[in-house]
Amino acid sequence: MLAIRQAALGFALFLLAGCGQSGPSYPAAKLEGNITIDKQPVASGTVQFMPDQAAAGSVAQPVSAPIQDGRYLAPAVPKGKVRVLFTANRATGKVITEYSTPYEEVVSIIPKKYQEGIPLEVAGDMPDQNFELTSR
Image (cartoon, rainbow, N blue to C red; front, side, top):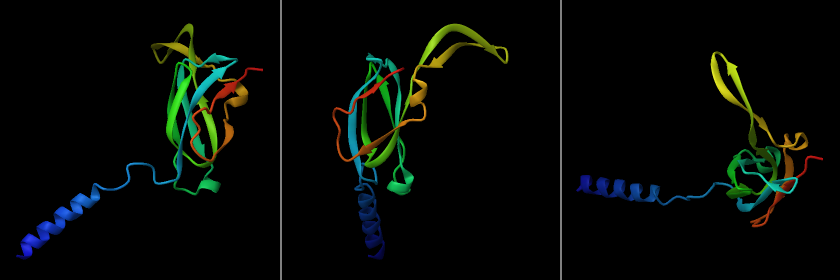
């Protein structure tokens, strides 16, 4: 009888373990929109949302989303103050050889003034959070 109870308890604990939250363990929002440089869509790259650890506590984690054809979708950005970082490169057409290995040279297309990120306050879902970067 004890073995049956232990088995039933083990099975119940197994079921409960699968019933946890599937989303983040911090307040989050869905952000999406366009990313352009001088009104031209960024073909591909990454946008990253870094939470302000002083404001958000140590629970929230950085969130990255791909940029594809000038668009991004980030379904779980930490609410509060974040720093938005962009990564996008283009090939220069040059071949570089380093340690006897040739590779195509790439350079960042993100204007220098944005390379340390830009601040953003995330209060809730933002379906039209566009980032219009300029090289000037």
